[in-house]
Length: 271
Ligand SMILES: [Zn+2]
Image (tube, rainbow, N blue to C red):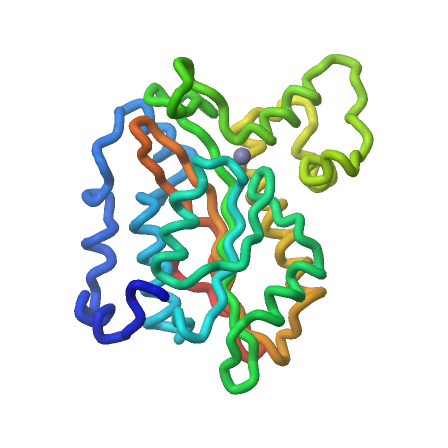
């Protein structure tokens, strides 16, 4: 069961608490070089916990998407670094339908999304779902793109590993992209969508590829929603962004697109 479920408790936070709680003063102390990269490339990034709470406040208080009437659907990378964010969403909402795959790219297909719809609570006969979709990136204390510390490893490693793999195969001079491989289906699908978006062309780097993966994942999710949901019968929210794994297990989220579609009408929301 969700740990909070009542509007009164949320309302007790006051009419305009969010700016105070989640302004930059609420950010943890971060190394200056790290902070500079975040400010430059991910303006508006905030701690994971603040992001999840802010989204919940907006969806519950402003739009009536509650833990009781909404199925959360969470897509993050399979990397264990991404799990705490998924757990935070589960704590505030309920057990989510899992969209997770390599790179945080939605590979479940229309059948998977149709299953989520079938499982979702109904409000006046209308299915209600909230999609959370996040790509991710490691970021070292000196702003080293991709680097992240991991328990049990003496040296920093790279995240997202799937995107790094795509960069490495692309940078192998003269080597054509590997064919699509049913034995490596998630990476194949991610590669295909990023290639179509032109994100694997020469000059690609991990920072740009991460943002491209965010956009491609969102586009793929929206295409699946278009196939598996019916805006005349279903209401849903979409919240997308990029997880940033910083030094000392600090986790930030850069908020990307966020909107709801209720009664067939789309409205941007603040997440
Ligand atoms: Zn990853």
